[in-house]
Every structure is written in structure tokens, then in C-alpha cells.
Length: 185
Image (cartoon, rainbow, N blue to C red):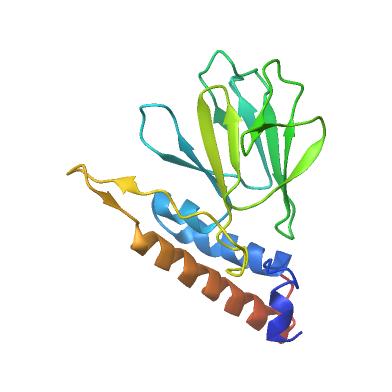
């Protein structure tokens, strides 16, 4: 394996890189660690932004067991599902919800649909933004939303972006060294 094998031709980190990054992130403290792996940025109307890790699969809805529990009457108990393959390819699927799911302001048709970094999902009044920091930097993405500070100002959280880049680089190096040493990932 050579270093170029760690990144797929379309700018996606491979499964080995993603697994190594996940192991590193589990050791990191705080919510900012979630920003280094695929996640949703959730900004409820009038509420603070939350970061929800996606993992391999995330159920969204009103059901008590949902990974992202939505408290909106327009949401179904099992409203939508996001899946992320080991290769990093993400899909979103509306689970026959009563009021539907929007992807980038368009109604989602039945079945699984590709989900790309920067895509916006709409469920009732709630807007979710999909983020995958492990996807190649050559992909065009919308600017990250500013986060409010205690003084009412806005910042771009450069420390979170730097931490994500460093963890992704460390994961790539760890995966390369693991492959070169012949150890299983």
C-alpha cells in the first residue's frame, strides 16, 4: 500500500483511514471531537447549534430510540435515516414520513439518496446540515455557519477546523503505518 491509496480517486478517505480517525476521536474530549467525523449540525429555530455524530446509521424522528430525537409535530416517529458506508459514502432516506423530508429545499423521493457535505435536510421547522470533514478538500462546500459567542459576536471556530484537520492527518498516518507494519485495521 502506498500513501496515495489512503485517499480514493474522488477525494474520499478510505475505510482504513476512517476507522483510524474514529479510534483517535474516541480518545478526544468534548463535543468538538464530533466535528472531526461525519456529523449533523442541528440548529433548531431560536435554539443553539448542536452537533450530532452520524456514525454508521442515524435514525431521525420523534421515537424515544431515535439517535436524533425531533420535538416537532411535523416529524414522524421514524422520519428519516442517514447511513454512512465505511468508504464514507452517505445516503439519506425518508422512512415514509407523513410530512416528508427536504434535501436542499426539494422534497425527497422514496428510496436512498446520496448525501454530500454541505447538504441541508429539512424536517418540519428543523434544518440539519451534513458535514464530513474526512471528505477531500477538493470538494466544493458552503461556508461553515458562524457560531455565536457569549458577547453576541460570531466566530468561525478555527480551532475546531484545525483540530479536525490534525486528527484526519494523524488518522491517515496511523492507517498507513498499520498497513505498512502488516497489522490488521
